[in-house]
Length: 303
Image 1: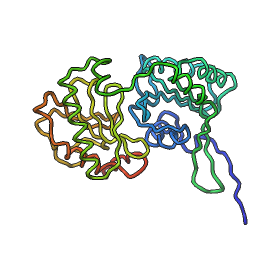
Image 2 (image 1 turned 90 degrees about the vertical axis):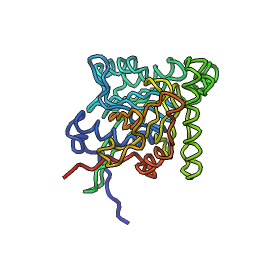
Image 3 (image 1 turned 135 degrees about the vertical axis):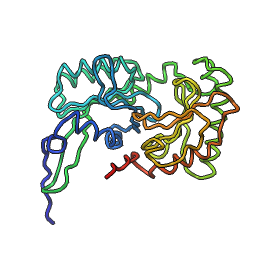
Image 4 (image 1 turned 120 degrees about the vertical axis):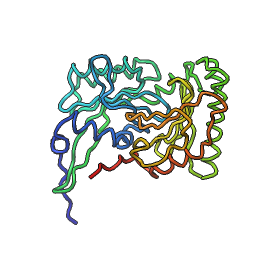
């Protein structure tokens, strides 16, 4: 049997420009990074503004933790380290990912120190990125995690600290959300759960700080009930484009609608119990555009 020779090639053979090529690619392939990290990642924003700087990728994981991802070609440097700390402070991220072609020994020591001395809920990852191929085969990205939190140590420290288990009761006690808003949200979540169960979709509700998200296999968001962050209670579905791009009719024309491109969320605000709609239409839209696995594909560009 003849075997090929695995070789590493420069990153710019696959992505000529870090910001213009690699970051957009990564934003649509977070499942590959997530697999290496052991996390289910969901995109929130690309080039997220933090003061006068821009974080490459802002994401959340299946536990609802904010994830800050900073990329750079070449070796790590102090400039990117400083920016990364600025981004973490500006986004309140508790999962930090620094991706580079090579992570220097001095910066690796910093990442390891952060994992040892930061609060238990903080997770810091250092990832070296390489492009591999065999002969003329397609280029294959490989994420090598060289720094990660010590899970045993972190879990022990988490167990020793007070953690909030988000629920309808803690939404009221910790976030001071009114009973009317909670009733709206709870009815929406119950109705979605019934629809998901009857259709045997397997989507699971996850309570986070201020919102309940339904996730499909791989940790990808399909539906969201936002109780706290964006004004009135909001029912949202994850879709690749706004209604006009998708060519479908608004199922809730009497509700205020908003499309959030960065998060790919199509949402409707619900201000009272009387405005609660039939969630079946939202479930069907989410079902229509949710793939069985992996990230949601983008809408093909028009000819």
